Length: 363
Image (tube, rainbow, N blue to C red; front, side):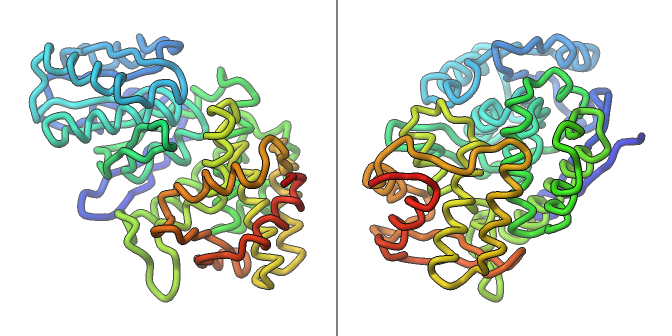
């Protein structure tokens, strides 16, 4: 099957290439005028194939970083900056990220901040990276106060999603990535839910046509949202704009921080989406069958739909540090129906407590 090219419109348009065995397209995405390329990759990944695809054309700098969320620190970013400086990287050189969502976030941030911005191409190796972190130009690192609180908007020159890399992905990591995919079904493309509900979960594997369709649909959802509202300033006609991509993320990020990132992002997103559906249902905004469909869809692919890992008060304090908050006002992305998102500002604390109890949480 040939590669699929999904354009991302905006001030600096670029393409997302999806397919099997498409690594040979990497130099074309980097474009002309590049001399040096730094490959930022998880230290647990063998990046030799990526480096080999670049070595004939560019001077390649190998930049291994810690695996997972541990990479997203100021210290790791600073070490990358020092390496770029020592290698003489200029504004015409580029960064390639190779790894999961955390590597993409960190490498994108390094590219955004080195010389106030150099070219970057993302080559995500996880399902989460393909459908979430690699598209949209959000980059960032974590602090003690929370996740992704330091960052920058820096759109890539291109994204290369080689589905062949998913074959070696542990099953639990692939399932976790489906959290962001199913989320896209609720906020924008209900056909995603139809595919999930009609497919044996065991068939959602690297070579399956169903997984490829889900990946491409989720990428298109994100591409359309970020093209309309790159910097999260808001959408038209009451639509939350780019904030809609954070559906379920307010509680998800609170869980991740409370659990010291031992819970996978997609797992936390699944819990967060079920929670916010319960909030909307109890507020009279969302029909009971759609609330129930959240539990069914996320649960069908093997994601958690309940949580009792921390007291409500602990999670509430963490949620108040969420990037969507305005001052002390908590803001949640909610649904009025499938693909009908809105923002619920200042939800009643008792409502949140009841929704948390509904997903198995305790006070």
